[in-house]
Image (cartoon, rainbow, N blue to C red; front, top):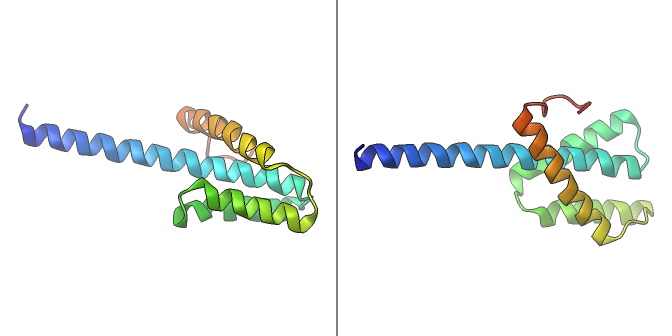
Length: 112
């Protein structure tokens, strides 16, 4: 195998890994949105919109800090009592769930 072939193989693997990470984080943000929407006592329609917004927010802001800050601010504004630790722990737990769903191919439905 030539160096050029190895380089192309490496690049293809990198792109595939980044795509997988992106899908997992996007799914996590969607699940996090549903969790937060429930805490905020949003209706089903409002909850879906909120979850979708958080999932799409990842496209523009890939870090966790902005997602956390958004949920923290929404909880504070609505008087939802949830510690920073609990929010971050839920983010971590849902990352694990999202990874499992994406790897199993069950991330496309909202009922997972």
